[in-house]
Length: 329
Ligand code: HSE
Image 1 (cartoon, rainbow, N blue to C red):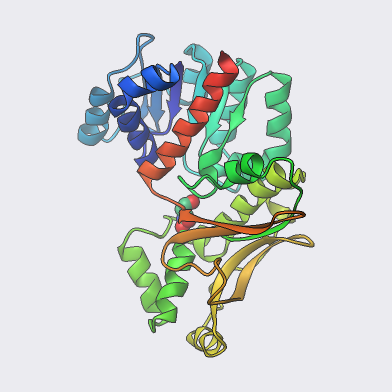
Image 2 (image 1 turned 120 degrees about the vertical axis):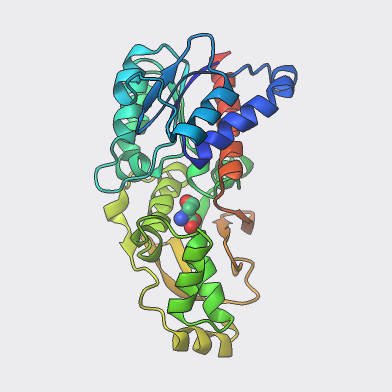
């Protein structure tokens, strides 16, 4: 399987490490023999039809700050390097979804399957991207966009197949959950945010976390994939956690509840602070994510796990590559 890797941050680097450390069993167990034939970051690209050396590209990134070997990256590389799959791992952009959306559409236009952990294109253009994928007869997979390594999308789509999911509600942003959990332990909103920043949990653009944009993007992806809705980011009613005070959190605690940033699909799509009973399985703490699916016949089930992290998200890309491998055979 020839792969172009778009973006070489924490997730891209973890993926290269994972594919190389698991090379033997991926081949013997799954007949998967991945080759990174092209990689690029904002500094440029490197390519080799025989497969790039994982150690060499990782060292180049560490030492020079870029994987560039002087080749153009971006759409130009996707147009000129032959591959089976594009793994899109550049940063999410919710203004116009670029450059990820051009990477994805160019790859699909060339007949490549796409695995995206970039949420921007899916949040802004899910319905049209799935149409373009169908038109070009290629797979579009995006497990890692919701829940990181926790297989939330797969659970809803595959484990609950045949069921009719009537509604769901989730804690889909680990950063705000960490901040609200710290506030529940007595920290002020300012101290909780400063602590989350110090630990590296807060996005470079903190508005994505604090104003609920990241959670709304994940809600849109779930609504399209799980509920068959044709919606995009502006369809979500959204409020972040900036208005949540210590008094709100203490008041909720006195009622046996915790304030959580909940993303829900029930009579519309909504992200906002809500009081969740402490005994509700959804009421997870720290950076954990959780989502409860309510189905017509099987009741409500909750899936809990880490929603971010380079290695965890790389493992979701591997799951998607194995799916693509099946489509290809
Ligand atoms: N900022 C995100 C979060 C990262 O806190 O969940 C994972 O999408």
